Image (cartoon, rainbow, N blue to C red):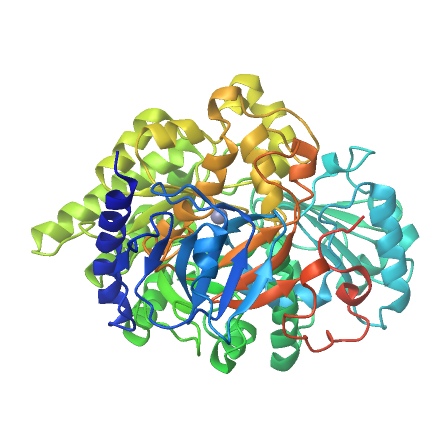
Amino acid sequence: MNTKDRSVRATTLDNRSRRNFLGGAAALGTVALAGHSSLARALLPGAPDLILTDGELITLDPTRPRAQAISIKDGLIQAVGSSSDVLALRGSATEVLSLAGRTVIPGLNDSHMHPTRAGRFYAMELRWDGVPSLEQGLNMLADQAKRTPEGRWVRVIGGWSPYQFTEKRMPTPAELTKAAPGTPVYVLFLYSQGFLNKAAVDLLGLSPETQTPPGTAYEFTPDGGAIIHAKPNPDLLYGTIGALPPMTAEQQAISTRHYYRELNRFGLTSIIDAGGGGHHFPEDYVGSEQLALSGELPIRISKYLFPQQKGRELEEFQRWTAGWEVHANAAHALAHGYVVRGGGEFLAWAAGDYENFLDDRPDITTRKYWRSQLLAVTRHLLANRWPLRIHATYDESINHILDVFEEAHALEVAEGRLGFGGIRWAFDHGETMKRPTLQRIKAMGGGMAMQARMAYAGEYFLERYGVEATRNAPPFRDVIEAGVPLGLGSDSTRVASYNPWNTLYWATTGRSVGGTQLHGERQQLSREEALFHHTVGSAWFSQEELFKGRLKPGQFADLAVLSAPYLEVGDEELRQIESELTIVNGQVVHDAGAFGGRAPILPEIEPNWSPVRHHGGFYKV
Ligand SMILES: [Zn+2]
């Protein structure tokens, strides 16, 4: 087989589509140079800005799966090949870094998380992500309470599971009251339960007489604290967070910079924002928007817009489709940097099935206007040619939603429009989805974005639905076999942690963060498969699969140099992996160890009592 020929053909095809998007920014044909058959090179003229040599590159480029070196020019990958061949391209101004055998992967892409909302709150949150014991978590909380000024809260907002703790249990309100006698504390577990200490109950003025929305309840405890239960409606959990005092726009921008640096630390270079409850577009996006406009965004963000007004979703989408252009980049100096990609992950609140595995499955069809509201929004987005994605946890909900999508398509076509034809669309989550359902999705050209929620809630799912259902939740292998595009992600930060190595650990071992075996062997991914679906696979959801996700000439120069050899390390070491050097658009956005001193220095996080300043983000041993 002639590898050289295949390489040329594949990249030429990519570049034809790319030119339409980039508007001919660069001449990007690819050639295999005569006498340099081990080198694939894009037609980016001139010497490279940066060369990385002596690495173990996992390229995900089928024409050249492994390589030693890569050169970068003007934010794009110029060449990939052996160290000697790539070094031959070196010019007088080229920086050369030897990787001393380290593993390099294409930058990771989380196809479903809530990063703009996370950045907005990051500086105000104490993270329990990765904390090994409840005792340690409570010590951190007590320590943080001491420096928290009067009237401010200590908040732990998701990203942890009781099974990650050696104690294998949740905190009690009494423990929170003991750790923080005078400071209000709110600890959120998924969208299932929230824990309040006595000071929080007092400050909120809660009592057994307090009115709660339907489907939620307060449980008061003898210490004077309380537990909020979503049964299964999480509005009260959302609402309690939303009522806490916000930061200024400037503080939100700094908070967001620190949060994105934290994502870069784990090798993330792209993220898809799925909106989020209580997160209003555009006013709550100021932190990320400021970074986009100032050219300081260190990660490529695609956004799906999420309506907030129940029953008036169509009006919100009408405003957005009139005022925003999909696929238009709003970032300065970063191609595909800050882009609205469509509507979702909620299209109509009444069609949302909350994933509370501590309670029964909700039936969306019991809600009066779910169908008419979803149909109206779907038709509006289709008529405006906006991509869409929709949250659905259970197979039953997915099928109800598919009925509406099929009807929307038929009605649109009957009026002479294209309906779902040519529209990129997807379901998010799908833990209990079945194989026949995948055939319906395949027929309509949809994708499945699946996240590490089971790694955090899997023990509760197991208790409720049993071993057999758990072995297939979610059914990765069935999605791949059905030929439906699959993207991996976290659904962080209020459900899972944002650390993608937890997702990759779960996807390749089938185990929760607490070590409980969930997936059966059939649904576990190989390491290379998991990497593919966390890079190329995720890029499909923002229509960027030709631009990023591989170490391949002509693609964006987004990559991570890892602290350990991903394909070889043991499972426990796998989840300790971090990036030692993260590059986005050819620029160093995070560095550590031997590569330290290259990334921009961040402003000090504010306020000065911020938990992040003292405890960081994901727990460091
Ligand atoms: Zn969701």
